[in-house]
Amino acid sequence: MATNNLISNYVTRREEQHFFLNSVEVAGIQNLDIDYTQPVAPIKHIGCGGHYFTLPAGRFGGQASVTSLLISNDPFINLTGNSGVNGYVVKTYAGTTQNFSFVSGYMSSYTINCSIGQIPQINATFDIYGEVGKVDSSDAARIGADFTAINAYVPNIPLKIAASNSITLNMSDFNTNRVQSFNLGITCARNPVYILGNRYPSRVEIEYPMQVSLDFAMDLNDYNARKASLFPLRDTKNGISLTFNNIVDNTPILSFAFTGMTFAGESHRSNVNNSVSVVTKYVGYYGRT
Image (cartoon, rainbow, N blue to C red; front, side, top):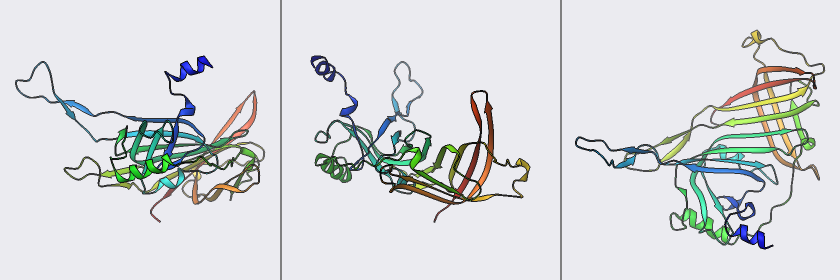
């Protein structure tokens, strides 16, 4: 016990880290990185020597990356749209003054993947166009409201977990009962619009089209390979849906449905230690709806 107390005096342990998107705590966090780099450049002029003064030489902001298990819900997928979000890492619910945070984060990519025997895992990356580091409730009304909600927050996260054997996959062009793993990715590139005299962008737009990619790895049985040369004369379009269900009662936690996904390639894999497998690749491009 004395050793634990000694350690706690010098390091911040993982149980002393709570991550919130706005005023909602995110469950299942496995890895969290928030960083910023000051864009610094020296001022050069005639007669200057020795010590150089520095000024900002680029846009203000940073990046964040979050990896989380799919537990209870997915707080990230709805951020693929036009809305930004604030993120706060706090030591305790009551102690929001000790924080490392970001303001006005816009999702730039989203992935979810799963293999046999695993819990689905989500990774979300954000481009940050506002403050990064320690923020105060007085910085903005939204931050003050979020901190007030976090201070009064009582953990009550319903335990709903999806596993590889509780995922429903439907496709229009092959049997999915031999799928061993999948990876779904959504790219949502951002374009910040700045106005002269303002440090922060007046708005952040999505660069359309958004790309959706989906890869499946499955054991090979009676799968029929395609010919690469058939594209685009035989541009195969597919409807694909994925549903992640609670392993306890099979109620849905998260669902995806895509139409017009294009078959984009396949990989044939064989080695002496495993059965023959194939990876099929699909891609889709989506504009404003």
